Amino acid sequence: MPDLSWRALAPVVLGLAVLGSAGAAQHRVEPDTPLQPLIEAAAPGDVLLLAPGRHAGPLVIDRPLALRGEPGAIVEGPGTGSVITVSAPDVRIEGLEITGSGIDLPAMDSAILVQQTAPRAMVRGNRIMNNLFGVYLHGAADSRVESNVIDGRRDLRLAEAGNGVSIWNAPGAAIIGNTISHGRDGIYVKISHHNRFENNTFSRLRFAIHYMYTNDSRIAGNRSRGNHVGWAIMYSERLDIEDNVSDDDRDHGLLLNSTNDSRVIGNVVRHGGEKCVFVYNANNNRLENNWFEGCPIGIHFTAGSEGNVMTGNAFVANRVQVKYVGTRFIDWAAGGRGNYWSDNPAFDLDGDGIADRPYRPNDVMDEILWTRPQAKLLANSPAVQLVRWAQARFPALYPGGVFDSAPLMRPVRVPKPAEPLP
Image (cartoon, rainbow, N blue to C red; front, side, top):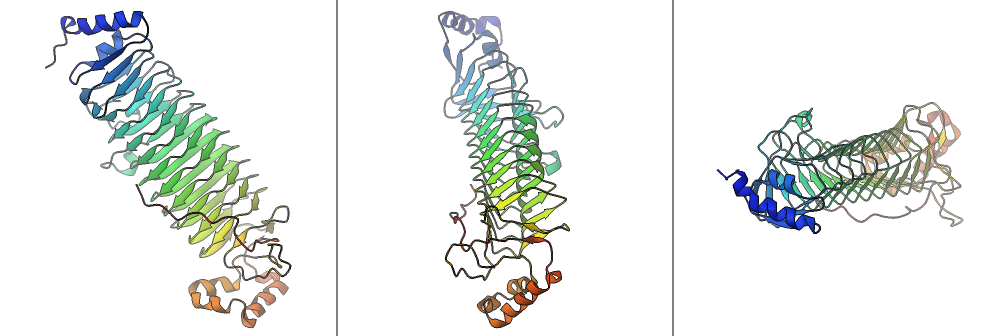
């Protein structure tokens, strides 16, 4: 057992006090040295540098300081509660491996629990392994979680698992450049605003990003692969959702549920198991220059979604390009510029890049061309043209009310191929 007496700790505490009086001090801590008394003796701005080896938690950081690890430094909790709880502002936790949280969901058992009294926390460059929650920002405004590897529990059912990063009411929080796998959601955010989630990689989760009641925020440059859903955006407004990639996600690549007044631009969804994108009761959004490829349904558009602009998107080799549930006809073109449809056999005789006739998805020929790919050789044959001519003269033959009055002859861009799972 380590000696916990004041006599044993006095030299360390005295050293910290003396150095702290002249400014921020750095103290290197060997394994098996009790950390909590050193935290309580540190002055604001001090650095505790953990040497390689195991350091025991749980820890409570109640003053502004930095807890840093040399390569191989591990902070290990006892398997109950949170490993590190932060209750003071301007705390930095860097370069550590952190493991050993409890599994109590209501108690928010986490590798790092940052409380509402701890704004501007920095959690950077850590390996956060086998915990219930990885990082929980519980009201910690303007905090930053950057360049961490977060790998959750693999021995729990999905309903019992925590999230890689959880955010509640933490305006200004930024989650940047992390690699997150296993557990429930990669990032879960609820009741917040002005957040940034950028350049993160997600795999083997339920939702890569799960967004609830969070406004005026940005989701950009993230990659999702092998999850149930890539980007589940719900009950939120005024978002920028740009340049994200979803590959091989089981259900949907992008879900917009009651998402309004947002920009969805330059995203890629490929080979989703059910739908590339699902738009449900989402209004006044702009979907532009996205790439939706190889899904059973390219886009499912329903539940009274109105006022949305669809332009410059590419719908490529989806079994059903559009599933529309509604009674009105909707033109998916804006300013004389529509979308690219890989199954559109139209011509462009004037060379302006716009097909010479409108495109209507899911006509009588689509099922034939999907189930019999060889029939594509006859896409411009007189027989196929006769069927399409008949539909044009008898609009009642058209299923659904979506049409594109200015379909593009070529996609705006072609994304680079998918990358393997990390």
